[in-house]
Amino acid sequence: MAKEGYRLGNLPDEYDSRDYPIFPASEVQDLPSIMTSTSEAGHGPPKPFILPDLPPIYNQLYIGSCTANASCAALRYAERKSSGRQYKDFEPSRLFAYYYGRIDRRPEELGKTEELADIEKRIQERIKKDTGSNNRKIIHTFLTQGICTDALWPYGTPSSDKSTHLFNDTSKLPNPCEPKDWNKVSWQANPVSHPHDGKGPAGEKDLIPRNISYYRIYDPSVTPTVDPKTQMPISNWQIIYNNPPVALLEKSLSSGFPFIFGSRLYTGASLESSEIDKNGVFVKPPTKNFKDEGGHALMAVGFDSSKRLFLVQNSWGKDWPADCKDEKMKGRFWMPYEWFEAVVDGLPITYDFWVIKCGTAYIFEKIKKI
Image 1 (cartoon, one colour):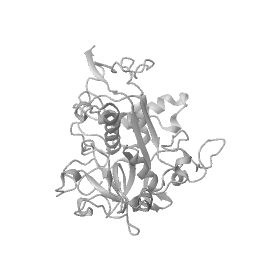
Image 2: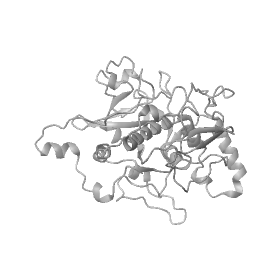
Image 3: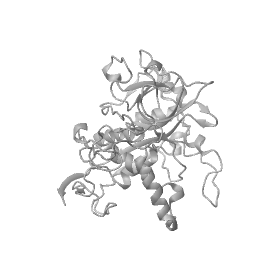
Image 4: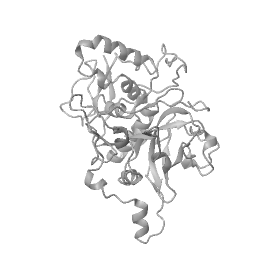
């Protein structure tokens, strides 16, 4: 947690061989940096690239829902780009995303039907606690569970105990543990729904159209060595999946979509307002005498290759960084490329880079009481 009271909450993804790359190996292997190719073309230093029409800044408040906030922001951008729907008309429930991101069954729990009672008990414990979540689980939730409107499950002012991680005031609605009118509302997808969608967990809620795709940013030509029996990696897969060249990250943004990612934060480099200069540039990662403060999910929305900076959107509200006068930079900051290149204790300090794309509009609508 940052000294200013802001929460973190991003957990690293676990290995999954099914992750699909954003670009094929043929487009990655000989990828030149955008800065180099532009300079060689005789156009001088490249101008900063910033995605147009960025989504509103979220404020996760006093819970570790940064992953849900970053993912919902990316989802809103993808939906806006796909359908033209205004941001005010498409506001997904971040608590819905965070709820399902916490209860999603973990890899070690899959296929163990003989232990369903124990698994369910662990899931119920995860519902009660502000555990944080990883990027893949939240995004996968959009595919398997859909997303309801913020009007159906509003964010409110959630908080949790810093010691026990239990959510506060769960007897009141809205809260992160129970959606409003969960058993009293029938949710139905829009008419553009996929015709083969099944029923939701309670048997009375239609799933939303699964017209969504998500891609990991990594070089698919390099794969980890996998144990043939367990199908789990033997080699350091984090280095392979979580250390893409910055040129590949630039290319992903240039293709028209933001990417979400996780970052370790450290003492002296924890996104305190005092660590961001007057131009909105965050400090470089520490190289010694640092303490790991935890993981935080963020969304990259642009870059300046001549200055080696990514423009990043945070989820700590528009009053962050403190004293920011530039309206366009409120809630955002420039993150040095060093954060995307550094490795500490054998692990990259930024990790789990994902792009979300979608087709037609998809969102749950409240249609009737039952």
